[in-house]
Amino acid sequence: MFFRRNKKQEIDFDHLPKHIGIIMDGNGRWAKKRGLPRSAGHSMGAEALKKIVTECNRIGIGYITVYAFSTENWKRPKEEVDYLMNLLLNYLKDAERSLAGENVVIRAIGSRAELSEEIQEQIIKTEAFTAKNDGIVMNIALNYGSRDEILQAVKTLAKKVSAGELDAEDIDDTKLSACLYTGGQPDPDLLIRTSGEERLSNFLLWQVAYSELWFTKKLWPDFTKEDLYQAIYDYQQRNRRFGGV
Ligand code: FPP
Image 1 (spheres, protein in one colour):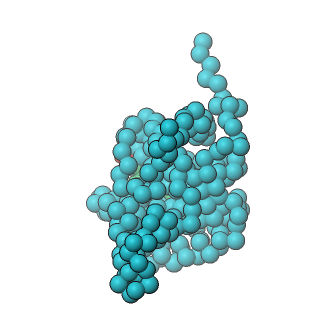
Image 2 (cartoon, rainbow, N blue to C red):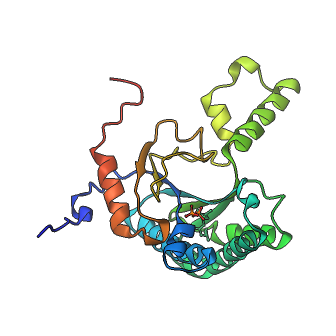
């Protein structure tokens, strides 16, 4: 009989990734397999996420960025968009009680103007409520698109150049990074995508330049802390050279 070893025991906790990005894919397929509406997959996805954030916080990961709603997700049926928005609203409300109690700092990244006023207000409240925490920083990518994020950063820098506050020659990686939603945070060391798809889907394109990419066929609602440990273990077996030899 084959016994899978518990990867947690094999992890080097002194060299954990500082920042993990997650593309939580496969909620719809998870529901379809069970003859359930897609919304059920999203609900279970939100539950899986809470467990993963709690575990990452417990072991000392500094940052986690999760793709909750992309700028392209508005193309989904209105019923599904409404369900996701309501789920996100409740997640943010609930986070004030549960995740704040776990010392999590919550931030929303993405364009807020298109979100409902209620969600915008809840984001401000949840961010303020959790800002005093000093545990893991959880970036929830909400109406997020990486190309838009980079374009906004370029525009910010261009305006400084035209105002004479910045010399175009002085624009470098650091200055552009500082203008992104994740400004001031380390780039993800590890990017996880579930459900067997192996693409970036406009997620953190600038920030993942040197990230280790880790894919699993598991659907997001089925993703457990054992899978998280497997991803961290595999990440630690890789030899990151950052372009060197
Ligand atoms: C992709 O699965 C998932 C999404 C578009 C939404 C992700 C949202 C959650 C995990 C839950 C809510 C998150 C928070 C922060 C409360 P899919 O619907 O594209 O699945 P499919 O490819 O199988 O159809």
